Amino acid sequence: MLSQIVTVTGVNLRSIRERLGSSIVAMVGIAGVVVVFLGVLSIAEGFKAAMATVGDPQTVIVMRAGSDTEMTSGVSGDTARLIMDTPGIARNERGPIASPELFVIVGHPTKKDPSDANVPLRGVSPGALDVRPQVKIVEGRMFTQGTNEIVVGRAASQQFANLSVGSAPKWGQNNWQVVGIFEAKGSAAESEIWCDARVLQPAYQRGNSYQSVYVRLADSDGFQAFKDALTSNPQLSVTAIREPDYFAAQSDVLNQIIRTIGFLIAGLMGIGAIFGAVNTMYNAVASRTREIATLRALGFGSMPVVFSVLAEAVLLSTLGGLFGGLVAWAAFDGYQTSTMNFQSFSQVAFAFAVTPKLLGTAIVYAIFMGLAGGMLPAIRAARLPVVTALREL
Image 1: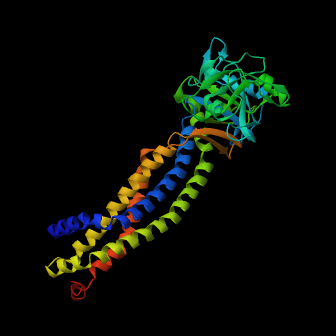
Image 2: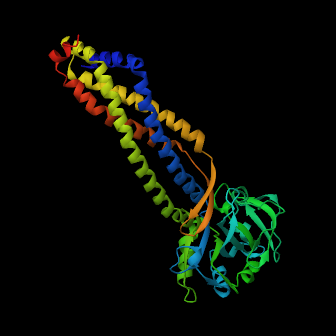
Image 3: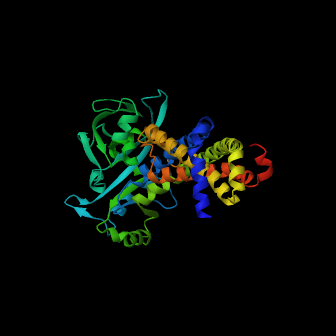
């Protein structure tokens, strides 16, 4: 059996050049499905990567109890001071390493579209860089407290217009001066603009209030003890979450939407590609009618014939999948864009990511399309009556 399979499959694969036109059509169809599949899902992968790399497990976000985002949270100045006095927070010469913060949305055009996008403007306190050691000023300098100066994330400066060092955008009641660019290891934090929280409060009529307090734990294993200290304080009604967990949760809704759309589109296109593969493989079987009949007359079984047809279908689909994957990687991987985070209603700048795992999934899907397209022609070839086929000789 194995010897027959090897022989028949070898003969079949060597004859592909005789059916080169229809074979290329099938490969291109499958490659097109793979390109679209990877193009859509690379958006989800890039957005997920940007959100998942935000923060440090030693950094904790404290918000009002019942809030799942900073946009729906509210913390008074007195509450912020009580949070900063809670045991378990790291300290330096200036006191607790913590940053009460505001989070507002400002309208600002992107470089590709003059219409306003929702850009996140974050008011931070003096301890913001101590709380987030991964954030580094890479161009210009940090803003001066008490002024209308701002620093802009690297992704935001690349994606949105008029946000380079020296620019002076206007939001709310204030004119702002860009004095620095910061990086945060490619995370979603680079989509934000930072300013002094004390300046942002009157600009947006927030009074002495914040939306969250970012704190740096003295010990990364001390999260539960810190959380228990907060919840046991009768003066506080707050919830605490590690920074990476918070931002990972922020990507859930958009990821689900993009993946659902991606699989739906790929599924519909895949059906078309399968029909193309079926047509190609039927043509292959029709062109090999005499050959198959001769092999069957010489004693070759039906199973080697089935395997040879499926092997051709899998080879063509694999080549199509590899070509589509290469095109998608060249076209999409690293492409910078921004999208709306539906949980914070703000734009997040990120890069498409065609990951090895995603490429592997696409190749498997291509092989599945090839198998599905080759199954019926393979069965037809195996059931081809020898006597009828020999009349073709």
